Length: 348
Image (cartoon, rainbow, N blue to C red; front, side, top):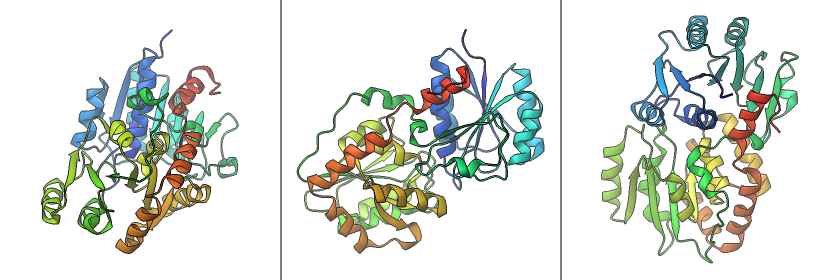
C-alpha cells in the first residue's frame, strides 16, 4: 500500500539559505518513489527553491503565520488533517519543543530533521541528525517513543546522485579542475571573494568552475568580477547537473552545509569554510579524520591560507585518501533508511 501525503515544513531564504529544503527534497523524492504525494508548507521561500520543488511535481502551499509560532504549527496540523496525512516532517531552527508538542497532540506522526540538539526536548516519533558527531546524549530529553537516527548513515541525498552509486573516480596525479560552490544563496558573499582571489590561488593550468546558487542575489556582480580577473573562469548558474560537475572536479571549495555531504559521496577532495559554531564543529571532526581540509571561518578568509591549501591537495596521494574516506562516510542510502523507519519503524 503506497504511503499517504507527506507534509514537509521547511523554509528557504537568502539569509538562511536553501539547505533545509534541499535535504527534505531528498526525503520527498524517496517518498514519491514509493507512490506517495508530498506538500511543502512554507512561510518563506525563494523563487529558485519553489521552482525546484514544483519541478519535482510537489505542491507548495503558504504558511500565513510567523515562523515557528503555535499559529504556524496549527496551520500545519490543519493542512495535515485536511490531506489525511499521517506524517509531518520539520526541518529548520525555528521549530521548538512547543511546536513539536502541538503537532503531536493532534495525533500526527512527526519526524524532526535536526542539527546538534537545538531544543530543550523532543517529542517527535523520529529525530534525524546526520552529523558525524551526533550523539544520543544530545537527545536525552526526549519522549520514550522517540527514535533517534544519528550519524552520516542518515545523510539524505537527492535522486540525481543515485546514478553515481557504482561510479569510480579517476584521480589524476596533479589536480587540474577546481570547483567553487557555496550553496543556494551564499548570504555572506563568499563566492565573490573567491572569484576575485582565483587568479592568485589557482595553480598553473588549473581550470575553475564557479557555481552560482539559484537563490544567490549577486549574479550580475559575480559575472562582472569574473570578467575583471582576466582569468578563464566558468560561471554556472543553478546547474541541473551538479553531481556531474562534482565528478569532473579534482578539488572543491565550499562552505560546509549540504554540499559537504554531496561532495563526500562523490569522492571529491574538499576545502571547506564554515559559518557558525555547528559547521565549525562538523568540519573540525571531518578534518581530524582526514576527510576535509578545514579553511576556518568565513570571517577569517585569507588568500595566502587558501593558496597553501590548494597546493597541499594538488598531489594525488592526499586526494586519493580523501576520496576513499568520503564514500566511506556517506554511502547514499540515507533517505531510504529514513523512509524505512517512517513506514516500517525499522530504518536498518
